[in-house]
Image 1: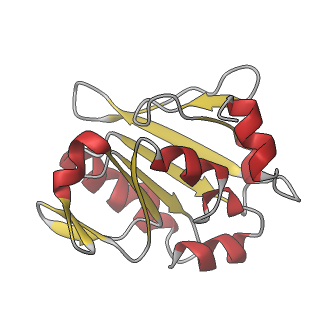
Image 2 (image 1 turned 135 degrees about the vertical axis):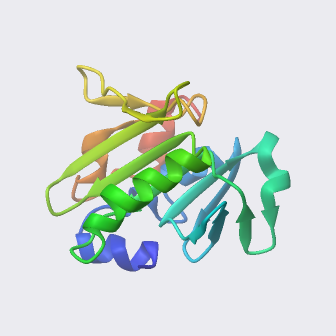
Image 3 (image 1 turned 60 degrees about the horizontal axis):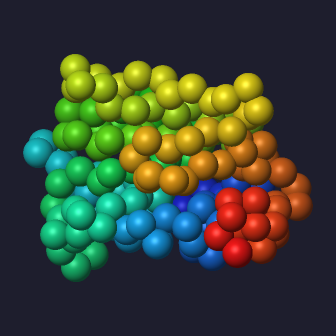
Amino acid sequence: MHALRAVAWHGNIRIMSTDSPLTTVAKALGVVFMAPVQMKLPHSGREPDVLFIATENRDRIEGRYINGAADLAIEVVSPDSRRRDLVHKFQEYAAAGVREYWVIDGMKRQATLYGLGTDGAYHALSVGKDNVFHSEAVSGLWLRVEWLWQDPQPLLTTVLKEWGVI
């Protein structure tokens, strides 16, 4: 499902749209893609709703596909993608070396965030007591998890000020 359609379908997960605070900051550290951009993995090709390639891994970008693992893959769960996102993609992304995998479930208002361990398996990443998550794959990027569900979404300038960007 296209990220913007998934965002609209799930309501208020606009924090991941092309002009959002998340993508604005991430673009300073690498390249952000929205579906449809295929990530070519050893045994499959997948199109995460959003993916991030760090500057040092830009050589993986080949036109409109990524040759290898993204540094961060984000999937927005829909009723028809639940098993695919939580089982199949979870296993494939870990095996391929996707450093961080976020599963955003707008229906449940739940964000499950995984980091790839040295053992090659995903482990749940913690959200701080203040409900702030600090990405391990995108250095310096953090977000308040409630921003995913907030209605209306926080203004770009508000978030950028909170991040100390402006």
